[in-house]
Length: 284
Image 1 (tube, rainbow, N blue to C red):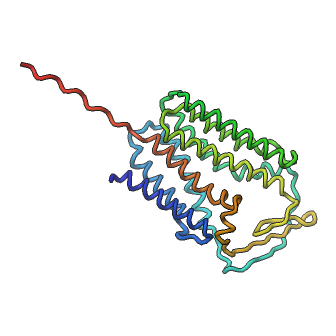
Image 2 (image 1 turned 45 degrees about the vertical axis):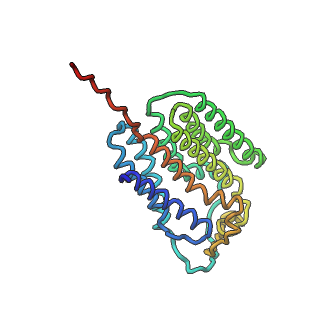
């Protein structure tokens, strides 16, 4: 197996290790997610030498962002020794529009990374196919329907503008899927669109719940204007709790991100084998 194959295998292995740790609530390897992204970046460095410059730059920009995010989370994690905590702090209430803007800003790096990966596939030679167009139509329909249901479910309270950036990135991913001929790229772009749609619900949750919710396992809740209490619990969830649909979806998002980025990177850098040139017939 070539070095490229080993790097992709390492990326997949670390991704599975991270997923298993998330499902059981006990990381098998705390740095597994970060190592998976590093292996994918190394694959780009090895296999991308002959790719067009703008494809390499777009892939590199997206992967750098997606490496920095888990690296920051890994090195900023503080172990509180297994005890819960409660804190009271001053924090002025914000309008729903301010909270929506803050939520969108927090997700902006991820959305930019997704857009870079989609643009890398867009920079490849275009070739529309019926299958690609069908995938784009279905994907965009699902994304728009999901956005409508999420906003309607919250009775219109959150500003609809909060749902626009993730929805636009999802639409971009599905549109690009209609212009590529590789099924690996189509699968990666479809997963990328689903990952972007998943961010939509997260943004709306933060807008809708603020400041009227009470934290369950951890978070912030606002009492009187100007005061906030925060709680945390470091107890590991059980497997049954993790397999609850919302919790399982949350655990799968990093894996979907990784699978999408790996499929797009491999699809963009794949070089089809060139048939051997026919030999000239021997002259008599």
